[in-house]
Amino acid sequence: MEKDSTKTGPLAGIKVLDLTGNAPGPYCTMLLADMGADVIVVGGGRAGGPVSTFSPGKRYVSLNLKSPAGTRALKRLVEDTDILVEGYRPGVMKRLGLDYDVLQQVNERLIYCSLTGYGQTGPMSNDAGHDINYIALSGVLGSMGPTDQPPLPPLNLVADFAGGSLFALNGILAALYERERSGLGQYIDVAMIDGCLSMMAMHFPIWETTYMPGRGKNFTGGHFPFYRCYECSDGKYMSVGAIEPHFYVSLCTKLGLEDVPEQMDTNLWDATAARFEAAFKTKTRSEWEDIFDGSDACVAPVLTPDEVWAHPQVQARCPSAQHRSVPPAPLLSRSPLHRGELDESNQTQAVLRELGFTDDDILAAMPDNLAQVELVQAWPQDV
Image (cartoon, rainbow, N blue to C red; front, side):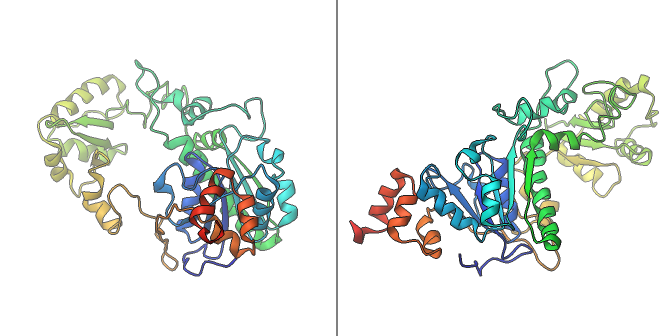
């Protein structure tokens, strides 16, 4: 398959096959595409990903992986592919004849990443689940939320994107680097629960200690008066993270308190929180932003998603970002990342023709319903 000469970035020239759905896999491959990789999404029934914001810079093809022609086409794609990411339940790819043991014989340099919630082994490996289940099983959810209410998940950021997408990306980049020495690819088993467990490295050791005696009672859980959010007079909120003593003093000074309550006296925390609440209620969020601007009090406004893009710090960091469309990150000095254009059209014909497939071969490899559409739309001369 021809190299996409339009791609730039640190992974330009790297080819990726994406056989995932939902969120974690598509987000991981979006990050690879931002880095310059040529990402081809292989769907079995329709072109386009489930979330269009993960789709820029990718190409979409549809193959019937239950047919000999479809699996043959995928293996041809694998011949010069660097990375394959799949998100099926354990055993599915083996039943299709497309597991790592098979595909590494097609391409020994292939890096094959399986991304699932519970991983490839264990009694729950084949169970269905979502982010909330994975953070529940790994102890994350059980340490979140106020003590007098049910645990509250932080969107689906922890398991899906941090424990899933980012740990998959970390493993893929490590395998790419190792391949430079060994010349060989390898298999990566990414379980979202594993990523969540890893991210609890700071919190497991302090559970049921003074620093984290229970759910909602810890430095970063919103229980301590110097690490939580406070409502302003206009109903909006300010976030406070004044953990260090000198930041705490700055917070109290900016709030106009006549004295600085003893920070670590737990007996004073309820009274301290009440004083902070009363102080924040005297002004609007905008007024407090002006007061804390440039200070070392670790205070920032709580912005809603529609407010983010107008904030000066976000505008300075991401001047080209469009409303509701996240920018590529991080910033690299010599090989900057680039967000490609959104094109979810079915490109099965173009991609497989690059591999030398005939029109008949392409139609045979596609799902029947899409093949009929392509027969009419893409090859009217053949009708």
